[in-house]
Image (cartoon, rainbow, N blue to C red):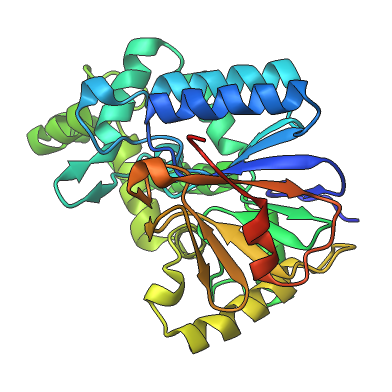
Amino acid sequence: MTQFARVLDFDSGVAMIVTDLHGEGHAYDQIKSTFLELRREGKADRLILCGDLIHGYRESYNDDSLRMMLDVMRMQKDFGSDTVTMLMGNHEMPHVYNITLEKGHHEFTARFEESLSQSGKRDEVLAFLKHLPIYARTKAGVLISHAGATPAVTNAENAERIFTFDHEALLMLAEDKLQSSYDLENLKQHRQYIRQVKNYLAIDSVDDPRFHHLLRGQIISQTSEDFSFLWDVLFATNEKGWNIGGYNVIAEAFLKAISDHSSYQQKVVVAGHIAVKGGHQLVGDWHLRLATYAHASPHNDGEYLLLDCAKPIEKVADLVACLRPTFG
């Protein structure tokens, strides 16, 4: 089986699969406690967090994003990456590229950047984010992702493109373009830009080596085809952008493409990313939408998935029996 940087393969063990906690510390603490108990009892072997761990929707004093991120990093170091795994979500990705992310009146990235600056852990967290996988495949035939199927990945070529995605190469290419095409010293006199970097990147001085990173992020987001491809993968709207019939076609082709270079055919996809009533929703023929807390309505009806990674799953409805309440 070919190994790639952005896709993991699990052929044994029971995985506790969790989605979209969005800085909700009490939900994270509940999940962690449940996982450790299940692990002690021999009922779970690994924890898989499907992205969007960070960026709370509530007031800043209720946002535990950084504490949660650092704790996941500590657990992964203590238990190993095979036991504690986190996938990249669309809310983690902007911090790799220093772009802004907003929804309605929520401006997400500035708050987390401020927390990073105060913590002194920026380099450690950024290195962790850059190495996050995007998919986890299982012998059970269940593909685990953040956002679900996307028309951007419906052939083997684009599957390998996302499997091997290199954030560092994209950043270095943009850095070279920036250094050769822009007067960065003159940028230090640009008052509006200075206000923006202070707000969005928590930078206090024009001499900060990250001062030009907001501009670099703007260049990448506006001009890079690779960035647009990654955006399509992590911000996929599933059936919201198509009808169910259309999404079924996309999901089937997506699963076939993701199965390339794998010993196991992926038959269904599990993802979070989009809100649901209760803790889960069956989306068409191939997709289980899971909401562990933040995207569950009401929140306390959230669920996690307890999946035997070796036991074959034939259809998406078979996964319903594997769901457990977050607050049970």
